[in-house]
Amino acid sequence: MTDEIKQRKLEHITVALEEGIGVSQRAGWGDIHLVHQALPEIDLQEVDTTATFLGRRLACPVVISALTGGHPEAVTINRNLARAAERYGLALGVGSQRAALVNPDLVPTYAVVREEAPQAFVIANIGAPQLIDQERHPAFTLSQVEQAIAMIEADALAVHMNALQEATQVEGDRRMRGVATALRRLTAEVAVPVIAKETGAGVCREQALLLRSCGVAAIDVGGAGGSSMSALEAARARTHGETQAQQIGQLYRDWGIPTPIALVEAGIAGLPLIATGGVRSGLDVARAIALGATLVGMGFPFLKAASESYERVCELLEQTLTELKIAMQLSGAANLASLRQVDVIVTGETRAWLSLRGFEEELRALANRRARAATYSLPAVETASEERQRPSPVDGHS
Ligand SMILES: Cc1cc2nc3c(=O)[nH]c(=O)nc-3n(C[C@H](O)[C@H](O)[C@H](O)COP(=O)(O)O)c2cc1C
Image 1 (cartoon, rainbow, N blue to C red):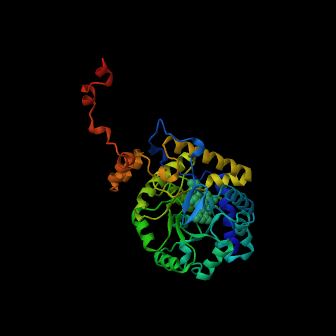
Image 2 (spheres, protein in one colour; image 1 turned 135 degrees about the horizontal axis):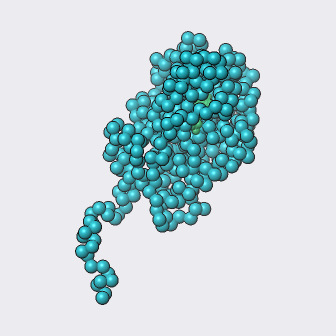
Image 3 (tube, rainbow, N blue to C red; image 1 turned 90 degrees about the vertical axis):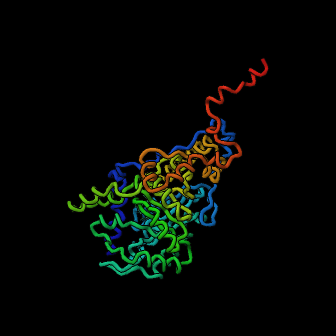
């Protein structure tokens, strides 16, 4: 089992980097439009990206998503990510720590993160299916979970919900009955806040409410539209000659709730949200925050950059931050709190889905937030024909 997990961790990195594991259906960020302000009255240099998450101030709202650990090859990637997180004041997650819990020799592949990022907000990671007994192994004990947290002196614990990946993985854990109860017990017992984290299939409103009742402190909505864990497992299955698993993984490649939709749906729980899944620019980061995210996660772009060099991670961050600031300036938001108050127009399939799910009122409110907050009334109260009949100031003086 220990070598099996270690080998799988290596395959996850190589397959993700060498095969296309993005979903063919996009996240739908193009459906989210921030209303342009022609005279924004904000200098680009004064745009403030400081965020607050679970009581901690972060220099920017971008999270480096849980990606790796558990194989010697992962050390360089985690080191490059952690150095950048420390420099730019970001939060970062490590990949599932199960590998090191069953094989302590692998602890340094995760611990490198805290060594390189002593001040950063670091997030430990375990799987929700491993909170209960599975066919091939027993549930994690509380002491094992505490070891995972202590291994990287974590500020929070992410419990990843990856039912899709487990179902499509040849050696996956198939049991899910009882996970919510186990999660509820865990949140009451561990000393750090727990983040419930989907890994690419999204969180709907009913599940968000369930998660809140389980006592989680935040939700990473981990929606569809970016890296697909099902595609990842399909590619692994192909390299192992597992044709049936490959076909099943391909079939479910696009399964799930796209990230912007999951954000709106999960917003009903009133918890801090992380938006991960298909975020590919600072403009997407801005769109996610305007839709209600507290932080925004990126996985694959960071994996690719960190597999090249630390400098590439820094370049990616510089570009993302510049793009975010431009979106903020142009929508008239000097800080992230204001960005959550700008007008957002939701169109296309994202709108169609949300309307069918009963979010029509919320969409209308999102589109008119400034007018609702302002003292002036909407232009609609004065019709175009009334406007024409009224004498202009110029007429009055003639
Ligand atoms: C190679 C790879 C490994 C991953 N491993 C984990 C993991 O161990 N735990 C976890 O919670 N998420 C894991 N994820 C999911 C990411 O944290 C993230 O949710 C996902 O990549 C979607 O973001 P993206 O579209 O920006 O890549 C992994 C993703 C990739 C690509």
